[in-house]
Image: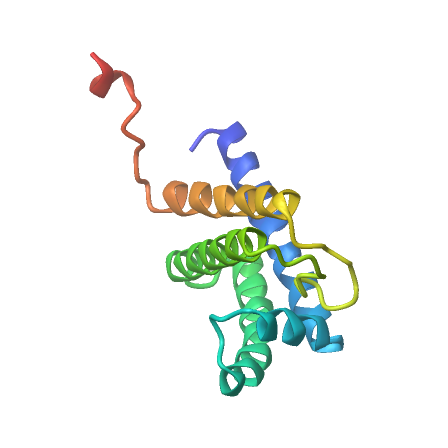
Length: 149
């Protein structure tokens, strides 16, 4: 990996870690917005909400720490990729169903309304996670000179 690519990958890793740590801490401090948004959907039964809201911030904080210290990086990047793909899909669902409340992403630390802006933001984080996963696993994208000739 050249120096520029390594710098971009490091920045992406820290951005994702920062988002996860702030999100996790926000949900620990005030889980109510997350409980409310999950309760508005048809995806989560009432019995699922408290376990999800209890486990999710722990997972986010643990993944953030693991990313920063680069512990079992391939596994953690795959978990981050899955997490951000889930967040992205959930935001699309909420937007399409017309929910217009705080998403609960950061507890009450940062208000973030459901909408297309949030979908785009989550798409950006998903793209960062995909980039890191591909770079870390040395997966080459199909668009190279070898494949386009």
